[in-house]
Length: 210
Image: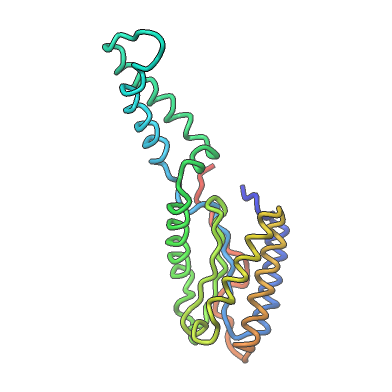
């Protein structure tokens, strides 16, 4: 279940992209992904770190413990924490931001290739990519667009999108980003009588198992 935008809002965004593509020769796709990675190893990794550290600080407790029971305490600690850390908010909070963004960036590039945005006839593929769990947004473009539009313009749109999300209005962020992409592309790559090669909608990718 996505928290950022609902089904009605997804439909509205599809209409906006259709309108956008009637004004530019670029091929534009928006992608919303629930998560780039499940990070299944994170709960076990942190539980193991805590459990292995127990022999170093247990002797500091104000009561005596028989050294022979420490391994049992470690096993219990590992099992308990491994289960506790499976709780999604805790798990994602334990993943470093740099790791989440690196994984989301890799996923964005995989999706860009999977959707064929790198193989349009004029090399004018543009993708607005949002990974919800990682709080990650990026605009990827093919070299036909990169040659005409400075990357700083896309960065400004990303910053505005992020500001909308932080303010609690993700849908407005999507609308503003699509409008910004549209105006930028229309100025640099105005519409020509060409074939629409890619779907005009928000591509929703669900990796999280119910």
